[in-house]
Image 1: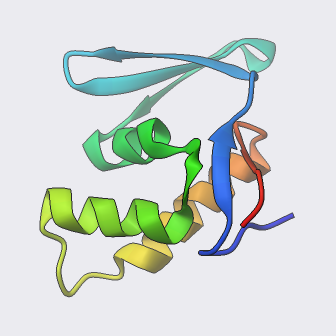
Image 2: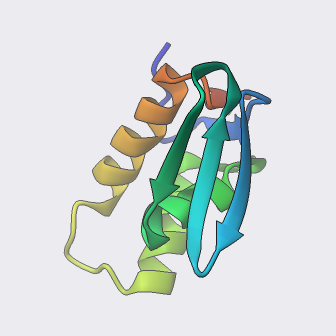
Length: 94
């Protein structure tokens, strides 16, 4: 199920994570994969704690990374939905 900008998202237990030298690394145990996230993707991961909507996460990114004029809302939504499809994030309501 795809999430919308209004949905709040949270991490599932399918991945452990750690920040190493400014990069967020996810360990997906069942797939035995390491996923390295860039700074912006890592910040999305950190903010996905169940308290913020995808829209609020995009707004935080816009403020933190001065992304005015970009397609940040849709890019954030697309990345979140990729993590949802991988089972690493899940919607927890509007």
